[in-house]
Image 1 (cartoon, rainbow, N blue to C red):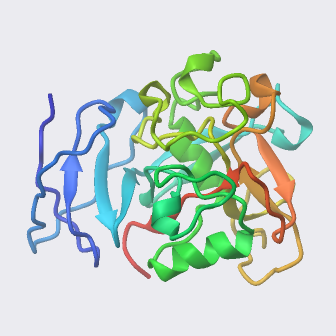
Image 2 (image 1 turned 90 degrees about the vertical axis):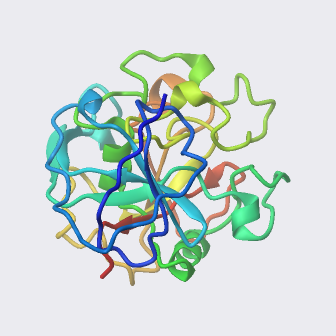
Amino acid sequence: MQRKLHVFFRWLGLMTITLAAACSGQASPTATPIPPTPLPLPTPVESNAAWTPVFATFDDIEMAFVPAGCFTMGHDEGRRDQRPEHQICFDQPFWIGRYEITNAEYGSSGAFAGDRRPRENLTWFEARDFCATHGLRLPTEAEWEYAARGPDSLLYPWGNDLIEANLVFERNNNAQTADVGSLSAGVSWVGAFDMAGNVAEWTSSLYEAYPYDAADGRENPDDAETPRVTRGPLGGYVEFSGSLPFRVRRAPGDRDWFIGFRCARAAEPG
C-alpha cells in the first residue's frame, strides 16, 4: 500500500513528489502538484525505520530525498583508509539519485549496452559535467555514505550481514552490469538502489584521510589532478568492497567498465 502526502517545498524545477511506504521500490504512477505555500523541512531523523522515502523528478532524473540527521562514517574493522570511525551530521537535507545514471539518460552506452544499464566507462570530469547540465552535482562521499547507511550506520543497505542475492557483483553478474534497480531487496533506507553492487560510483570528494571534513579542501571542484573517491563495490572482495564504508582512490581521468555515477542536489537550489 502507498500513501501520498502533499509536501510543500520552494525548490525550483521540482515537478512531482510522492511519499512511498517503507521502501516499496516504486514511485506512485500519478503526479501530485506542488502547492505554492512552503512548509518547514522535516526534522532530523534518528533511525532508518523512522523515515518513509520521498521521491521527486528533476529534469527527468528521479531522486530520493535524504533528511537531516547523523551517522557514523567509516569502519574501524575495515581497511586503513576507512578509519577512524567518526560522526557526521547533516543539518540540511539533500537529494540523491534514486538510480545510477543509465545509458538512456546519458545519451550513449558505455561498455555494456541497454537503456536501463548504468552508464560507465567515463571519467570523473564527464560524470561531473553531466550532472551540471541537469542542474545537479556529484554527491560528496559523506552524502553518498549517509544516503546508503542512514542513522543506523548499516554496513549494507539492508543490514549488517552480507546477503549476496541482494547485490549485483562478480559472483552473479556474468562479468557485466545489470539494469539499475533490478534487485529490490538491495534498496537503501531512502529508497536508492544499487548503492551496494552493480557499479562503483564517482563522488565529488578528493581522496584524503579520515576524518572527513568538507571544509578542509577535499571538496575543491577545481583540482584536476588529485585522485577522487569512488564508492561502492570492486571486484570479488565483496565482504569488504560490497560494504558501504568501502572507498577507492581513482585518478579523475580514469575510465573503468565498472565505475558509473549518480547525481545529487541541495534541498534548495544555490
